Length: 256
Length: 335
Image 1 (tube, one colour):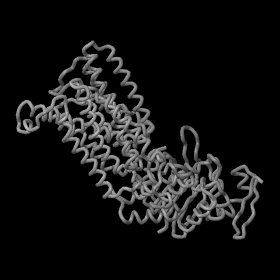
Image 2 (image 1 turned 180 degrees about the vertical axis):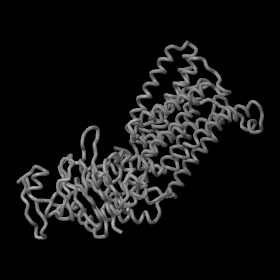
Image 3 (image 1 turned 60 degrees about the vertical axis):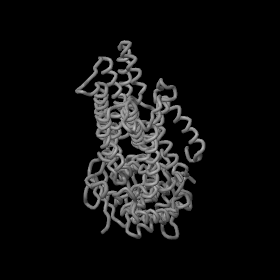
Image 4 (image 1 turned 90 degrees about the vertical axis):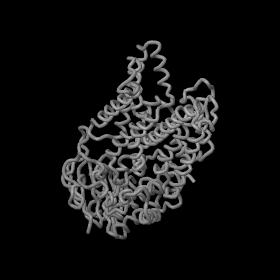
């Protein structure tokens, strides 16, 4: 069965400020969706609504046809995992302990089972964090932290993976490896939603691009059609040149 | 060793070590005091040795251990709940509420309430009132968060301290001395029935905190983090605050505020054992119990027959030990 997330007329007002105008779209696995747009466009807000960690919105946001806020937290988080932009940890948790926390919705007892450990080892391998699994999370670099957070979300064995700027601190090699990993996961049937500012990686690896602008849905299409000169100018206010790669994907250069 | 992940075996060995230490302390510290006891005479039931040992020393040690355990546990819990390494059992105002109740009872000269000492009853009532107030204020904006909890708690705490200061200034000379002594905190011999009451009061709090230990790992990272992994953050915050306040309020009613235990015990353990609350919480209880009993033994002997307030000893013993621990162990990992 494929996973579906349906957003219809979802809007949000916070303290008198309009964060999201009512927007609608539907996502169905397997698919890798890039959620794009300038700062303050409402991307992270939308992600937290999809992840079920923010209530108080208008309209309806349904996972498998059932309103997200009506799902039991445990059941929902067994199937949908969410990586926020950054996580600040005050206490000396090791990377491995942070990854283990991803197993919480699957593991009712006091200790992790063999199955939990299998998922954790797999997540650690996929994200290449084994070298610092025993290190204090606070001592890691920004990119290493992001990979540990991703591992924690993968350990959750989700059907839907929501990532808020997962490549912001990653080096080139790990950026590409992350997108390759996400493509493979989509091949295995996952629905992946990635917030990013890297239009080229999004264009190269994603099946669909949703562009938000000032809380509104501006474009929602395959990258070839959503990422054009006019749309980039309208959404980002930047003059860009769009070419094609050999694979036929858009290649955007700007600021040159 | 600190970075190892928690397995049943490792948890069992950490608890076993802590329990052994606590047991040794429980057996040895009653033998320490301003007068030497002939153990043979005490054990064969001869007066006054039997009374000194079992009615004075043992009950005092048991109270110290129960209080130290609850403060250590509540400290670790509040640090996770507020995601603040400097939180103590007293941060959120419950102990000030207890103190306000106790000071009020002493100021008006209230002695006995339904066969129990009025100071205890008033302190418990004060703690309960503050608990209710903070909960109400913290959740008035709809959802409770650790931030609203912290704001409400710290504010109520200040108001209580102001009222205590006011009452203290109006009190007569005799009451004023009693108030000052109480606010210093201290362990006194109590009846066994009082210990039983205290146990019954704190037991639900201890059980709740220990069985939800795994969830506190996630809440110590963040509320959204916990919620995105199936932990009902809002409910856990409420229940955690309730449980921690129960531990703190009940203990404070009997001993007054005793500083440092709730701060230093969880921190020292985090340095040695890591941050996983499945190990940290039970060990904070057991090591807290042992630590306060030892401090109290020192407090009643170091200037015997005079007694030093036990809060002086917890800070003077605990502080330098903590600094040593910080400098010798894992300095690179600390900040």
